[in-house]
Amino acid sequence: MAFTESIYQLKNTSALLLVGGMGTRLRSVVSSAPKPMATLAGKSFLELLVKQLSQQGVSRLVMCTGYLADQIHAHFGEGKSWGISIEYSKELEPLGTGGAVKLAESHLGDAEFFLVMNGDSFMEVDLDQLFHVHLEKKAIITMAVRRVENASRYGAVELAGEGRITGFAEKTTAEMPGIVNAGVYVFSREVLRDIPAGPCSLERDIFPKLLGKGMYAIEQHGVFIDIGTPEDYAKAQEISEKLYQAASPTQSAS
Image (cartoon, rainbow, N blue to C red; front, side):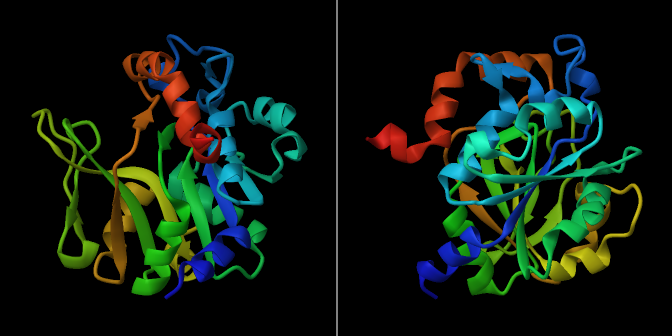
């Protein structure tokens, strides 16, 4: 299958950005803003993600908001300053990652595929390649994964041949290397049938239920970080220039 087809899908689909979490672990250093609005090199972390999507050709973004949603809406508006169209799906109670995706279903129109991204982590990822694999495998979910030195705080993704996902290992206290979920996905629309309305977690409730139905992973090798803890947020500050370069590969190459 030609990459031109995956590029077409990328430019004509929506990206759901999950930005509704309360960020309790980060509250000691980011007390008055939602976690994705934490400052990074004078801008918000969320701007980094919006820039990454826009640079790779995504034109429609749905922000799945919740905690302190008005701050996000006030800052980004309809997205004109970032060259991207932004809509909002606001949860009135905490819904978790799965519930937030389900709530946003009405924003997807009749799209066969859509992107989903966590709003508190950054993965340097080739979205065209992710779509290409998804279409080639006829997958229900294609997940960007990353090999890390310490997988204990994430839990590991278990893989078989051709990148097929066969299981998920729980978080442990033992530090050991592994392949982890990087929080960037392509979903086929049929996934929505398996997500109930109301609170639920993609990672704990939905993904394990879909094993054996066509879940695939593609390993990425670029910069990866989440800002879920004060320690990792401080690390993101240290490598902010590298993160912005990774979000704009065409600019950094010029």
